[in-house]
Amino acid sequence: MTDAAHKPDHAPVTHFIRNRIRDDVAAGKNDGQVITRFPPEPNGYLHIGHAKSICLNFSMAQEFNGQTNLRFDDTNPLKEEALFYERIMDDVRWLGFEWAELRHASDYFEQLYGFARELIASDKAYVDSLPAEQIREYRGTLTEPGRNSPDRDRPSAESLELFERMKNGEFADGERVLRAKIDMRSGNINMRDPVLYRIRRAHHQRTGDEWCIYPMYDFAHCVSDAIEGITHSLCTLEFEDHRPLYDWILDNISIGCHPQQIEFSRGNLDFTVLSKRRLRQLIEAGHVADWDDPRMPTIAGIRRRGYPPAAVREFWESVGVSKSESIIPMSVLENAVRNELNETAPRAMAVLNPLKIILTNFPPDDTQWVGAARHPQKPEFGSRKVPITRELYIEQSDFMLDAPKKFFRLKPGGEVRLRNAFIIQCNEVIEDATGRVIELHCSYDPDTISGQPGAGRKVKGTIHWVSAEHGLPAEVRLYDRLFNVANPLADKQREFTDMLNAESLEVLSDAVVEPSLGEAEPGDFCQFERTGYFVVDQDSSPEKLVFNRTVALRDTWAKVAG
RNA sequence: UGGGACGUAGCCAAGUGGUUAAGGCACGGGGUUUUGAUCCCCGCAUGCGUAGGUUCGAAUCCUACCGUCCCAGCCA
Image (tube, rainbow, N blue to C red; front, side, top):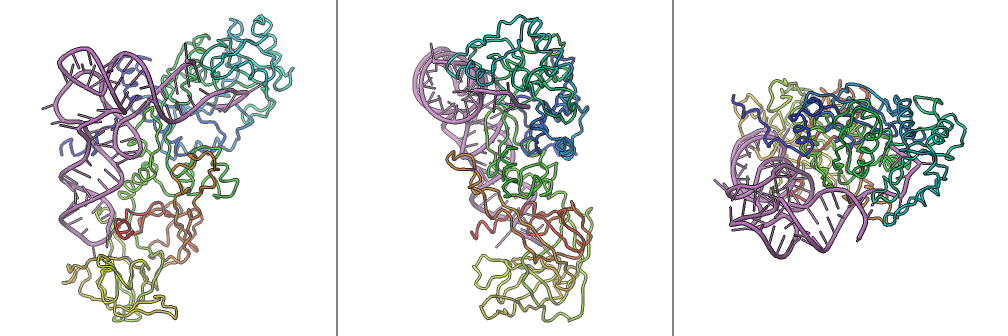
C-alpha cells in the first residue's frame, strides 16, 4: 500500500512546544538533546489534567530521542505522604510511560543548601528575621511597591552564620527565613525578595528528621532541573510569572546548566473538577467512595472506569497544546475512548434491564448454540457459541406497546431479529394486574438463522438477548457525569458540591450476561452490543460478576426519540 | 499607566504578509450494516475580539480600545 494508507485521518497536530523543541534540536542547542521531566508533588492522586503534562513531557522526549525523568517535588513534608509516591508511579506506568530516572527534589537537599550558601556569600540572599505577617506587609500589594526588610542589608557573613544556625535547629519554626535579594519594587511580586528557605520541624517521608529547613518550590525546582540537565522544563501557565525568578536563580549560582521553562495551559474538562484539593473534598464528604471511584477524573478512577490508556494519550494529542485557557467537553474524551474500544473490545451480549420472552414454538428443553463473531469487522477476534433457549431475556427498552412509526424494535405483532440468531414475531403481551408488561410470547422463524435459506431476510431492527436458562446474573454499574453543570466552579456564590449530580451512579442488580463472560476477571473489557463498553470491576468474582459501564455507545435513536 | 498572559466556527486548534482560513469534536444530509454501533461520502468561518492605520496584498505588521485568566503562601 501507499504511505497515504497509513496516515492518520487528520493532519499531524503541531503546537508551539513541539515547534520550539524541533527548532532547538535543529539549531543544535543542548547538543541536540531533549530531556524533560514530570515533577508531581506527592500530596494526592494524579488526575486527567496531570495526564496532559505526562503525555506532553514523555512524548516530546520520545519524539526527539530524548529522555524523561520522574521527579517528586517533595519539598513540603507537611503536605506530602509516603503512599502517594507509589500511586503516582503506578499511574504514570499505566499511562504507558517509563521514566529514564527516578529522582526527588529531596535527593538534592544537600546541593540546594550549598547553592543557597553561594547566593548568600555573593550577597544575593539574606536571612530575614521578620515574622510572616510582617513579610506580607512589607511585600506591598499588586499596585503598590514593597519595602525593604530591615534585615536586607545584613552582612553576608552574618547571614551565612544565621543560615547555618537555621539548619542546625537553633531557631523555632517561622523565626527566620532565607530570602533572595532582588527587587522589592518589582511589578512582579515573585521578584520582591522571595522566600527561598523556611524552617519546618516536620518528618520528611524520605529524609526523615535530617533537615529542619526546607527549600521553597521556586528555589528547588529550577535547581533540580539544572542538576538533571533538563533542557525543556514544561509547566502550566500559572508559573509564567515565576520564570524571571527561575532564570534569576540559575543566573546567580555556579551551575553549568540553564533549562528553558515553557508554559502551556492546563486542560480542563466540563462537568467535573480537576484539583486535588476539591477531589479530596468529594471523598471526605462521602460524595464518592475514594480516589479510584470510577466517577472521579483521577487516573485511578478512569482506569477503574475502563478508559484505555491509549485513549487518554490520543485524547490529549488531539486536543493539542496552547496557551489559551480552555474547557474541553467531556464528550471529546468519551469519543476517544469509544474510538479505541471499538477497535479493541470483543463483543458480547448482556441484558441490563431484563424482560422475559417465551418462544412458543421452540422445544421446551432444547438448547441451540449459535455462532457469534467477537468483532463484526475483525475476524481475527474469533467467535464464540451462544446458547439460545425457549425462554430468553431482552432489554425492556427494546419493546414498546404503543410504538411510534420509527421504532424499529419489538412491538405487538411486529418482527425483529435476535442478534446472531433468527427473526421472531411478538404474538402476545402478558401484563400484570397493574398493566405492566411482564412477559412476551413470541414465535421464531428457524429458517432465518445464519446458514439457512431465509438468513438474508431483512427486518428493521436487531436486538440483543440472553438465554434465561444459561444467562449469568450480574451487577452493572452505570456512571454519569459527576456534576449537573458544565463548570461547577463558575458560580462563586455557591459551593461546587451543591452542583453534584445525584444520579451519577446507578446500580442495576438484575442484569444478565451471556455465559461466555463467566470467566471474566477484573480489568477485562468488552462491548455489550448495542449498549456500551464495559469493564469487569475489581469487586467482581465468579460468584458475583460486577461490570462498570465505561461509556455508552453513541445512540442516534435516543437523540431522535428524545 | 502594578506585573504577566490569552482572544481564529458551538468546543478544542493549525496558521507568524501572498492562490478558495488545516484538522478533530459537535451538528445537518445521504449510503452500507444481523449493534439505530462501526465504516463511507457530502455540507459546515467572504470570516480571524473591536476600531483605525501601514501595504499592491493583513488573522499575520503598527496604534488605540474591549473582554477573559493568573499573581500580594514561610503551597506547588
